[in-house]
Amino acid sequence: MIAFLVAGTGSGVGKTTIALALMAAFRELGHTVQPFKCGPDFLDTGHHTAICGRISRNLDTWMLPLEANREIFAQASRGADVAIVEGMMGLFDGKSGEGERGSAAEIAKLLDLPVVLVLDAAKSARSIAAVVKGFESFDPELRFAGIVLNGVSSDGHSRMLESAITAVTAIPLLGRFPANPALTIPERHLGLRTVEEEHPSTDRNARFAEAARQYLDLAPLLQRSHGSPTLAASTPVATEVKVRIGVARDKAFSFYYEDNFDLLRACGAEIVPFSPLSDHALPRDLDALYFGGGYPELHAEQLGANHAMIAAIRSFAESGRAIYAECGGMIYLGQSITTLDSQALPMAGVLPLSFEMTQRLVQFGYVDIEFTEDCLLGPRGLTVRGHSFHYSRLTQNDALPTSYRVQYSLSGKTEPEGFLYKNVLASYIHLHFRGNAVLAQSFVRSVANLSPRNRDAEDLAL
Image 1: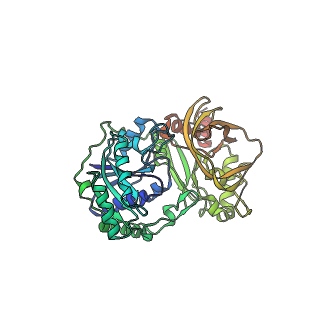
Image 2: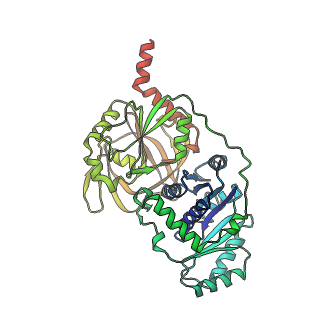
């Protein structure tokens, strides 16, 4: 199997564009391509999935145990000819400046992946050779498969860059990309626009594949083969279905880790998608609801106007059945969201919480969590890791109890989180269930115990 990691010298150098072009190029050659993303990002994975036709998986050496990363990579790569991992931020950027923990470099070494290094060459000449030399020598344990220069302005500029780089390194130059608006994915406050908002996948694939044909040399990568990790991938074996979990999935709610669903299925859950935007009733016979993150603020008027769905969700919550909500999902379950132009828009009204949008990130970064009370996801005392990423803040909380103690890695601040109402658990924190096997098991067990169908069966047995 061909496998490599696409990394940048920093954020914003074009590594997502290059990664998508490489994915499209290998697919056009007839290869089955399995994509991955380093770090907790939800947005890039959606674009990977659209290009590759296989679900992109997240790898994260801070939020997840090292063994879990190996397992995710080995399991997802089954049946693939090519595995392409997109890094995050710069190659060596991780949780702190003191070490590699959580960085793309750590993942490259963990999985023995050579690195394709992407550099922004738009404002560089010979100095770019110093950057390449520095990255090549910074960590002798890393291997480099190639270099891609982004933002090359002309043939003359290209020749100057190439002569400078080839004078200091034997790493092959794989391509020289000009600035190309047709390949630019628009951004907003949380990052790239979601794949659901972009052009149909056939158009996207054609654009990226054409760019790869024109600007990339795949020969050095095709000559490199890389075996799957020595760790054998364990395949979760689904048990008999015990519960049906309704998952909100549409343009407003799309931030999910597919591994969470895999683990829930392995514990006996059936995942049933529904749309709070367009559906007017919940699917039948649900035992729980799961609201992920996303952009409810961009669709607030449509969400708030879907009164039939809101009534169904309120009734579900009041019945005592389980609901789990993260970030945008929690905002939707609240009373209202106030936009940047001071317009207060009603939400579902399940929780006595109100929110407002902000101009900048609030409590950004990785978090350590201790459960201070028993909740849907586990017992008191359980510790897990997650991440926080939102441009909004809580403005009203009518004394809801909490079940988390959260410590933010960047600020060091500690605060109560994980709001509880009946059997609703809502939080700003995103959790990857592979971080602790107890999470999925506890969720399914809690849902089964709270299900009216299961309670009715117990009553009949008595």
